[in-house]
Image 1: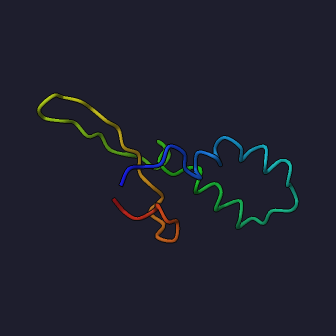
Image 2 (image 1 turned 90 degrees about the vertical axis):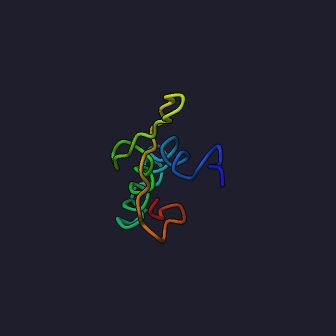
Length: 77
């Protein structure tokens, strides 16, 4: 199944800081930790691996998910 053009992590990375600022004092530490974990998924922060085609030498970097089964997209690859 192909990845959607936009994921929740993309939305959190784009709008999370402004949302947290606007809602300061109304968001629990647990909620902030979850947002941070989601924002980190599929970024260099969680590492990744390089895939390279042996036929044409095309290279693609794939960053890791959070590996949290409850995440929905966090299943181990």
